[in-house]
Length: 415
Length: 81
Image (cartoon, rainbow over all chains, first blue to last red; front, side, top):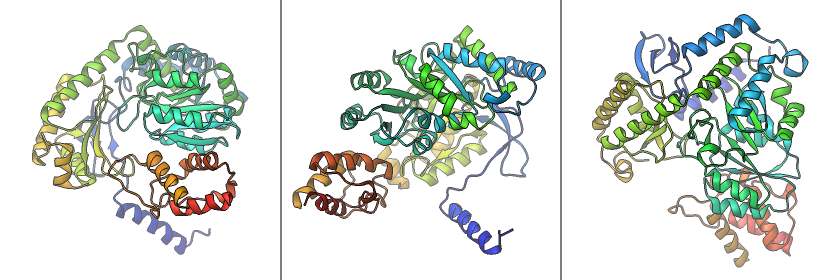
């Protein structure tokens, strides 16, 4: 009732401010199932355009896999649509428990608890297991959802420079007097595609009696020889105290997340984590789909192997074309453009060429670090990648950035 | 005073600056200027307490008090004198 014109004007001004700053986000409507080939309505109201999707978290190409869709249908038929309850009242089915058991086995942990999303898992976990006597020491580039979880927790918080083990050790020494210490990192960093040095971190944590927390949302299902995650890649399988991950990316891409790790920590989440206690858990139809995904991944590494080959092919192609890339070997391949406007222009031109890839710039990434973040999928075939490479090359030539160094691009377009 | 100021400046440079080209001085706004996020103030506070064997109450450790090397130095001086 009191939403009067004055209040409205205040909000309008705020929205205009976002537009003026050039950070107004606009959705593009996809009229098909999520896949390598999609049909998109953009700008809103325009006719549908067939494009190749180069920016989905659909790493394993399972979002619309027939077996996963079939399993979801079966789950819908046998377990219904919704639970209409939180877990501890009457919102837990046998399949929720089955999924927790299978995730535990897949990640090589002691126990698992499902959350409506990994955002919720990260928001709830720290407050559940730490108090104001403790310290959380996080990498400076961890995901926004971890930062929210840290804010909700009464424990002290400090940071270490991105992937800097010397700095981390200094922080562990500085906070040696704290009752509990938790070192917090992403497994794969979503904007740069680099991986946390979990072997060195595990060693430091052991030396200073700290627990190790890893958000492996951009890793579960495909990083490591059998796709178990970043801990498998670095030979510390079974040594991570807390892993959070999502079912909204490689593992079918629908929704949901979890905390997996030491059984006492998981039990405390079950007793105290607010997003678990006060929200319905993952819908039965999604649980059924994820169970099928885990069966597929446990039976064969074919999909993560294909993803690895596709990634190598894509990186090699872009490098040979003369683009500046962020180093790494994950399917997140950032094409560095440094200038925000240039990243927007190139993204728009790529769209015209039938390639859907989004430009990221400040505040999503640091100032002067604008880029197009490409993400490779096992759902891509070589012809998709070849078409995308030829579009990137054509657009790169238009802006005369091929073969140019970082410094040269900055000189041409500014920061 | 000079000595505390330089110790703080050196710590801030080593702790928070990522880019070698960045330059800060005693009056550079650290928190309001986006160089130090308010989260990271905790390590600075703990460093000062350990270095000068003082205890800074939380209510005194405001983002304003930690915004420049000079203001941090004044705060330290308040508790060391």
